[in-house]
Amino acid sequence: MSNDGSNKSEPILSHPPSRESDLTVATMLKILLAPGGDDRKGSLRKHLKLDFKEISAVKPTLDLIYNSDFTNEFQNEIILNADILSGPGFDSEDAAIVPAGEFFEICLDYIRRLKAKNSKILFGLSLGFKSNWRAEEGYLVSQVSQMSELVHQYRLTASNELGIRIILALNARQLFKTLPAFDEFLIEHPESTVLAWTGSGEPSIPKVQVDQIRDFYEFKKMKSRIEFDCCMTSE
Image (cartoon, rainbow, N blue to C red):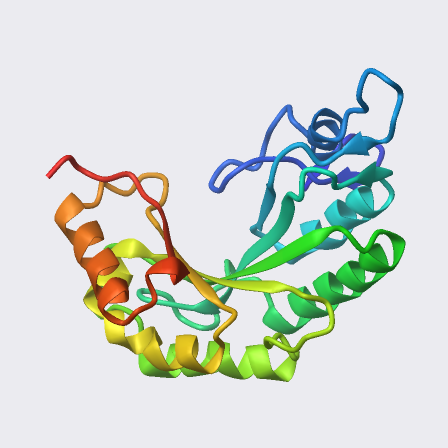
């Protein structure tokens, strides 16, 4: 969030530790939702993933999208992402963790209202664990259980009336250490998928580790449920 000098904050695109940017969410939406040459409504031209780093940015960002008039003729998806639980190397009280309850309540209320306005809008909730790629322990079964409990609590199951896609956003290095930890979650929530990522400032992950993650999911007959957003070495 930034302040424009009038005591009114607006959401911006930046990534910690930076808290400054010359690109606002409003400007980004104007670009993504620009109308066509025939003066039709704007349409969502690409998948839109919003990675929230603080809870104060969620509502004003979603309000901007709600107040935008657009179609979804290209069947693109709006993905709302946040680290809502502690993961490897982080304490549950860490200030960088976005409060899960507040995040869900704001997002689900917004999704309901926007779907009532335009039923063709597609949504994904990308649920992450605040993680340090250097940590030794990997993901704990207790952390996975916490995430599963939240999915149940907020009724984010295959039968949820909003048709929300659930994505587990997991650090690839930490996932590699503890691959079986997510088996029960994926079986219990068959609509969910995994996105294995490497972060900014993190060294490229060895290709052999990415291949072993992929092979593990193929062996489990879940090949279609693993995706990657990784910088990796050639070997």
